[in-house]
Length: 369
Ligand SMILES: [Zn+2]
Image 1 (cartoon, rainbow, N blue to C red):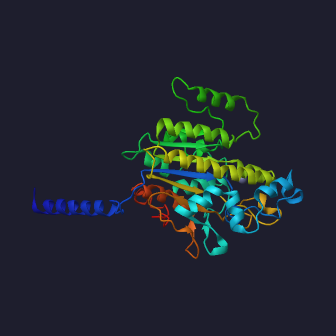
Image 2: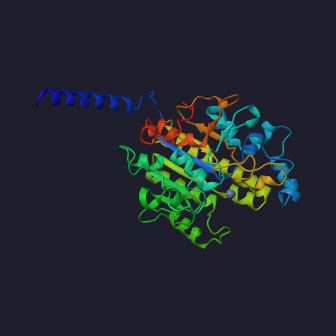
């Protein structure tokens, strides 16, 4: 080897060393070994932080069937009691042991940055880490972007331990089932079963197949909940997406009573998942939940049911985090704005992985460690 050659080889070796040092994750020690990203489609920050809106709990603006019963269940004298009545798990557990962003009345903004303010652009933003102007429709086809779920599934220790459940059929495209090869159960896909199927499996398959569908492209949250519970107990995934959809559909139908009931049920589903996982040694004290919405909605007496680029305020969301690495900072106030695009890198960072190095366009992790 001639001297110039030796010098350039040395230089290359040093450059390589430097590059490795720069991309190696400089992470603080972490306890999170599992992450679940949980979404309630189009669930507003207004209900999360202020509870049920008394102006909408009526026939005129909320198409409420039984106003007295609804008010008994969810009306309270002040916002903090009202929100705890609607979301007992979020306010009594998540907001006490973890933190929650998005109360705009307390100078805590959590925003969608894609500008479209509807579902596919929002889900893409949260799982790829960046908005994409090409995704301008809910039928945009297979997602051209790498997602943190697909990326993690290729990382050592995570392969085959990533799973996606969602009540909406578009999740197959949003997570790009064809390219990612992730196990995805979307809408009315036949649920995963043991072999041979257990009695519970068979009952669930039967319910999915025989229940009259209210929405053609969206299955029921309760069915998915049962499916997810069975899957977790059997397969022990380390990274999971769980997408509930009823809150958005009921809002589009103008049914404020059903929005509140499905939102309350969503809270119970999340609590049920949390408690079930904490009882399992694989998950106890080593699991973080990130809980959020894909977009906000309008406000006032009519725009509450709608969302989209032309609906003021529909960029406003909320993001809650609970887990062994997240301080019990509770309801965040007077803090810098956080964005939906930060969720992807947050998932990786909690697991000690550096998604931002692989996808430089991804927004940095949320300040939740
Ligand atoms: Zn919608």
